[in-house]
Image (cartoon, rainbow, N blue to C red; front, side, top):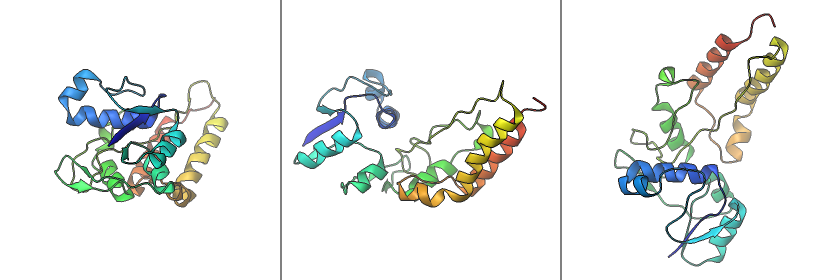
Length: 189
């Protein structure tokens, strides 16, 4: 087997090493979770496309990549054992299960890790993509326009996101995010 990994820093490296740190105290102590680490073995490739190309070109290769990109490249994937002891596929249902396992009302600004969550169906190497929007110093008009873009994405972009291999947020979470935005809106700038 040939182990391949990213040479450059990446979000997928962070999520993968966050998972390894969650399931292995030894990994956590030696390497931790980061966007760029000193890998103990294997060959590296710069960027996801080069990593995927290296997997295609290397017999018996094993690597990590965002599931949508791996799917589009027709790569095989492994079922991963989750915290509940179930082996699950990297599919939308598993990411949704990880997302719905969190009590989002108890988080600060909806920040929470989806990695290694409880639940029979939860895929353990999941993450959320965040957008950071500046509020202070912005006019109410500008703030509302930015949020209109995200509301439109929530309302009409789920199909496009899914086609790219991303998992749209569950409707109940979208509702919570929109309620949060309403509480954050600037007044009278």
